[in-house]
Length: 477
Image (tube, rainbow, N blue to C red; front, top):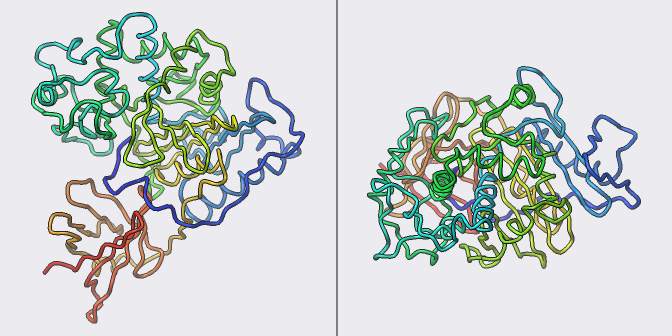
């Protein structure tokens, strides 16, 4: 769910491409997705290519501990797993394994809005302040308040996260953020842009939207999602609060170093990323989104794509909750999500009808989103495959220092407990991983760092490679 300011949708590096093409004559599966890993004789070229791709990311790239993928085309859906759940129950991964799906929750929040519009309970043009108490009314931009549609299309002028968020538990950063803090933020923060005019990915914006809809309906966010979306669509394993059965099937989450991490909780900003789900449920949801599963929600689902606003990429648009990628002569409707220990992707092509779900029990944010696009259309490139090497932890001190890339933008490099951490100005701290003595790569963003070593054996400068640019910074004295 979180975002590093180094652009995640940056440079796409060349990588080994495994062709993912459907095998002719593959049997149609109408309802449940078949787990081919449990039936080796049923494997075909289509699934073998996906399995090889996932194996490559785990065995060589160490991008995840486990994957569950479902891809559906004209020949039906196929489910492929690789890796392990690594949970206390040691249960094999399958289509009913439970993951955190992070920001995919935003599509559900946008759908709640659309459903409430269909019912006449709210209007897209309603100002958010209409449903908030006096102490929580947002400050307008030059006298113009933002609307519910602005919140749903990432154009409210609100930032990525609230400026008064200072988590006590960084392993579960949203857990302690209260409704009172949200109201304090809204009443003191002035949006930076005119409503509807500027795209900025905003967790607090979608958290606020979910909160507003909950207040309007007089139900908790989870009660609203369950009654209005999950129950009608048969999504019995899509919840915030884990049922006993879901808890039994919950896979363990991992950080980028493949260490187990706690689950995330979002009591106040639930609409931004609180849901947990399974690959089977996500494919059922995509079926409904593509009109393959009849539901009373059909008109509301279709309306999510009616408004599309330009993002910071020419071929990439923000709809309500969804994003639309029009590169490679295609139109992909997609959404990815990430938390501290999980990454998730869902999407479909309006041109070919192919749909895909990719869930990982590791925070491999950029990798997962690029893999998901590739499963939908092989012309979308795979992420670079980095092979991590081992370095003596005692040598990491040679890279420590402050490296100004501009007078206002500094990378601070710090060794911590055998790991090399990098923090950019105004951002969170993230680990970089060695591929040689001088080359390191991020797992949370498609970016790399090369250190230039001085005669004393210490780094004298570094170069950040990202977005097709090479930014050099000399170590400050």
